[in-house]
Image (tube, rainbow, N blue to C red; front, top):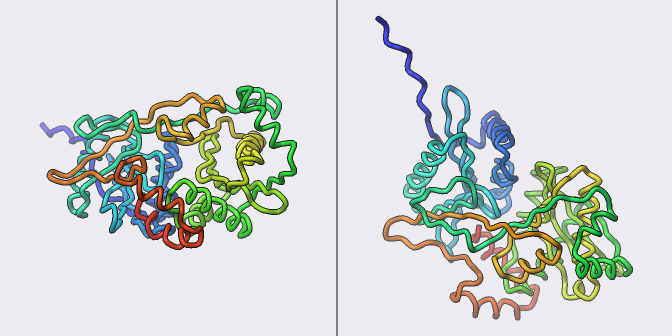
Length: 354
């Protein structure tokens, strides 16, 4: 009697993101699995072009069909060391898989890959998390809510105190523009760089924002608020799966009295409605931080995010938390730097944060 034909074994291999067919296949798998923008190879490759941090990934396959995907960015920094991050420069990522078994197999392979690449740490930002890794659900919260049916309903959905701030801003002589052209990009970078300097954080290189805008095409844009022709608030947003995500945004010192940030986010809600979005994803914030409470003031309910990290035996986990005591003095110093100096030094540091 002939032996039964064995079922094909599941295999795990490094993804070839330079192969257009492989790239497209993973894009389709990530979409079918309900992945975030940060699961897309499009994101990984944009990060690589914008920061120089290498785009990698692991695919699980059985009988010619993808069964799992783990997007990875190899982040290297002279200050912060080396790490495999899923996904780099993202608030989400992690494993997408059809089964828990496949997910854990991908994580084990990520440990092996990290050892070969001299990385002491693997970081997963969401997805299935190995129980043996260090898991936290207390460091960050996400903020997502449904958009209302029309402009008036959207305004009424916002708590009274925050709604009053928006109305004050709408009465001022503020001009809102949306686009992806060079003028939009320059205005956004100027505002964003000043905003993060004021928070004591080094700014990312502008090449990062340009690469994401170019890669995402119509799925990304910039909304800028101007007062007397001067940009005072600006945000680069992503559109994915029926949601708008204001991702990199900020305002100048003048924005507070002008309520420019309030106008910016409300106008983004209105524009997102018109392009068919049904959810507003306000991104993540550190639990208990100022941005955390700001988003709650808009009526968003915080949802704890689960992250995990693996550290090689005898190694030290990466510490890029700005709330860490190791950085408090550096943050205070950074806030006092002249903006041109901060903009010159910031990208050299920030591109290694991942």
